Image (cartoon, rainbow, N blue to C red; front, side, top):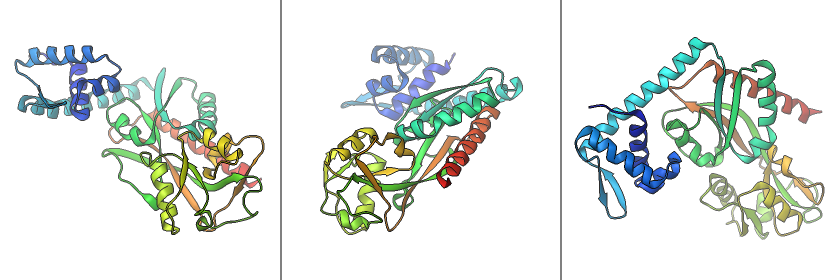
Length: 304
């Protein structure tokens, strides 16, 4: 019996997503290619590894045993890659980093510039990734590092097996059309009768904003449900509602038309950098050091 790691990796995705089509999206294969690889795996082991139940597929007993050992083998492969990288002393290393829009615009350019100046042998590739999905992408080896968000007032569990490093506190401010609100600090409760422009409850950000408003004594009235910070701010500038914008998100502010207001009970979110707990390397540590320097420069600029 000969087992191929790429087939075991696909088996893990099928098991996690509960279907061939979803696994195909996760692995960037076509559904037919995933099916062919699973058929080849069944020939390798001499027994079915999947069975259909309704609209989903589940692992057979053989498939479950195989998945257990696949996790061990894939973890060993990840460890081997890390060990080889240590021996190579960072020769032509590539890091794939998951980013979300505000970090990509407000922090990552400074990080990559600093790293490129200090460690030109490290090549950084970024991939825009929903923070809600980044943990699973790390666990499955699709990303080396990822920026994540934590809202301390609306904490949610992380994907198991991640090593998390706090990067910075990112303060949140109310963004409103200029002249819409009285100048100065405001209470969140004062916005109970205003239209809001935020993402839906399917996103961590959307859930966190709703939780903060609920704590302030009201249910947010979402008139425009959008995911993009730049889109939300453009709608705010047009007078269509209010939203929350972070320090990093100020990158997306239009030239004029919007005023930021501090909240009397400060709102913040934490930015973290995550990796799989079994995956570490000098390149990752170098990226983390460049991130710390970039954050320090941003904080110094804010004080000026």
